[in-house]
Length: 177
Image (cartoon, rainbow, N blue to C red):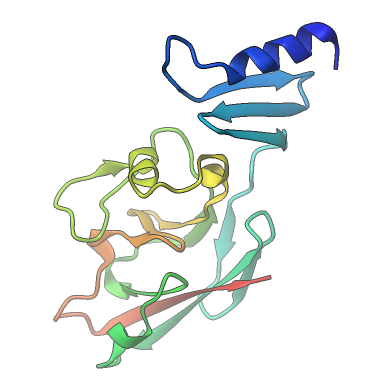
């Protein structure tokens, strides 16, 4: 680091007029340095994260997130709620259109969090949940042609929830690699 680069980074640590906000500094087109309140995160810039097509019944590794996702089509079991956790979720198979895909957040992403009547920006949802800001861009999203089905590990989309009329369900599970 040069003196000027070090000085720029240190100036980001001091709040401007008593206000803390996230500031980013791109160092030599290789490393992003982000400062938010009391946290500093260094991350190597990588090419855009890939989108993967997921095949129902097959395990889909997502090494960028350190997980694998498996989606299995099943008749809706009467006790499906017992198996819902952060890493295991159920969705209405009839609501899913097109191929299942796993991707990462993009600017402007919107979905309808379970229990809400309207749509919400994904970034606002993650801020409200206090998801670590430096890891938000690495949260996998399971989607189809109708939109985001599941913010993996966080919340199902309301449009894909199990209803009393649901006959077939998709059981979605995450496992660590």
